[in-house]
Length: 375
Image (cartoon, rainbow, N blue to C red; front, side, top):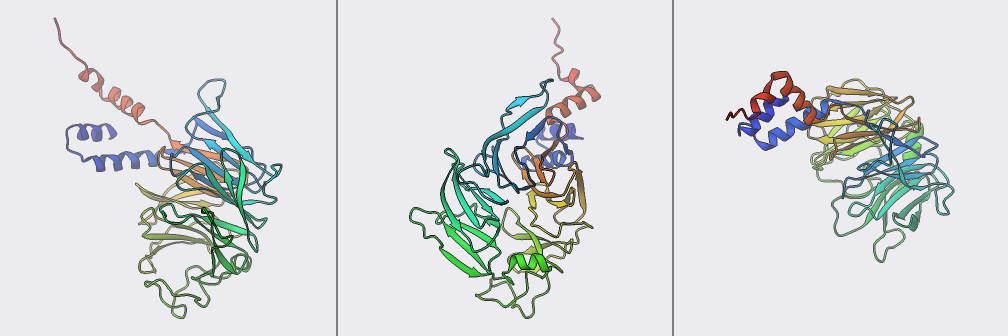
């Protein structure tokens, strides 16, 4: 019982870390479609990308297949419904095709600059990666790629560079910099872990881990001649754990793999059966406390225990295929984007204090805690 754990913490019988872990696990187990918060999305196409900023944990950035990107304030509601109970969050920023610098085709990835909410980056099928000033909603820099851009990422811990890694339909992966004196293309390299023709592999179902190595391998990785197959099909999603020790990969073979980055080995965690999209990239997410991985599985989202592979929970609420998910550790909320153009919020079903009050009443403890002094 939650109340017993609270009492144990008050008496010093339960350490702070264990109490926090128990609270997080309890709230994660009660995640359900929120009846208190909703996003009114301006997108007219599938939602492909979601990310909350890493500095404040306040602003949700979304990218969609209609070429638009939007920002929402997850802290403060824009308005409430007639009952005053449901908080509606409308976009506080929108850039779309009507914008003078907007993307012409689908936005495949939208990410925040890791150390400041003053900048965000969008990648698109129109071959461009654009860096936006959040305050002026103007493009401060753009990079023209040789083909469609399917993914973009920045290191959240880097302090000596401002590099954007992109994966495109070209045979090379690119690293672009937008520092004080950036070169238009700081470096480009053949894909180190296999065939770099990402789009062709997606279309033909080829394994992205095969191919001759072009540069020196990570010390823990074996050569391409004796390396085992990672997926029997295209790799559709990648996600590292927060400590950077493990890598999760999803494939068009409807399999999820957990890799030890140091050794390059498959940890052989057997994740329970799932059915994944095969035609487009998927955005996975991971939380460490409790250890869960969230995976878009067709029109639902499944949460698996990271280490056992057991299904922890299944979330159903979207009407069409789910493309992306993001877990907000600060609010312990899950955000999901789908082809139905909606962003859904999954939050703990009962606030912790309400839960404690209910248990107090159930056990009659509220009266015990009151002062019973008499004159």
